[in-house]
Length: 146
Image 1 (cartoon, rainbow, N blue to C red):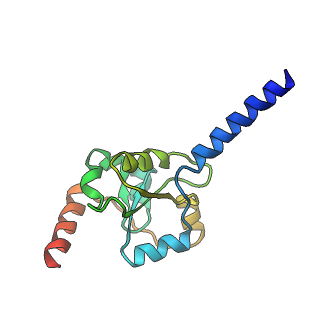
Image 2 (cartoon, rainbow, N blue to C red):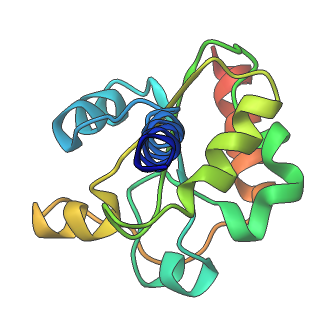
């Protein structure tokens, strides 16, 4: 009986670790570099009220835009997509990461430090909200000017 319980416990732990590792982690430094190089789409999963108070620069408010997410993500399915939520113990990011993966994106990562780690590292924040329409128009202007 002890062997069976030990096997079941090991299997459960293995599944938990596999689920936790489904989306590779990205460091604050790596994310900052990708933002600077304009090579990432960041998705904030902390809710619209938290988003308005402060979010990673350029991040999409998942709560306000989940229905239009496909329009806000790049056309290239191998583009870097990073989802984040509150911090290391938060798993809400999985909703956005899963949505991106379901849309066919293959380079989806997780900022496990979350907004708490970002703030703790004294990184720049943007405040306020942006509608999907605003981001889409900005994206279209950038495309037309190239």
